[in-house]
Image (cartoon, rainbow, N blue to C red; front, side):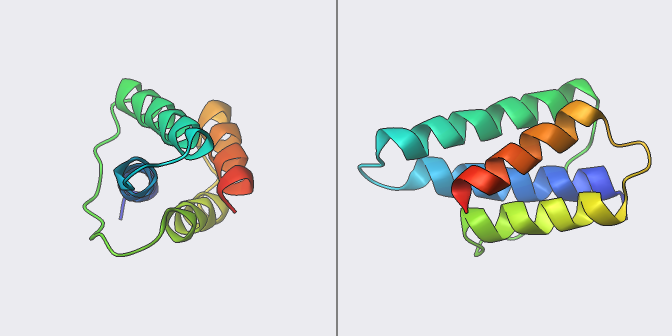
Length: 92
C-alpha cells in the first residue's frame, strides 16, 4: 500500500468532516481550509489518493494518517509531516 496515498485518503475524509457540518464555527472552517492546503501539497507531489470510506471523525482520520506517516517516515516531505502534525494537534 502506498502510505502517502492512504494519508491523502484520510486527509480527504477529515476535510469533508470539518467542512460538512451545518453551521460550522469559524475555527472548524479554518481547520478545514488547512486540510485543503495539505491536500493541495499532496496533489502537487502527484500523490494518488487511496479511497478511505467515510465514517471516521476528522480527529480519527487525522490520527490514522499521522500513524501511517510515523510508520513510513522514509521519503515523507517535511511540509507534509509538519502540516499534518499541526492539524492533529489542533483538531484533537
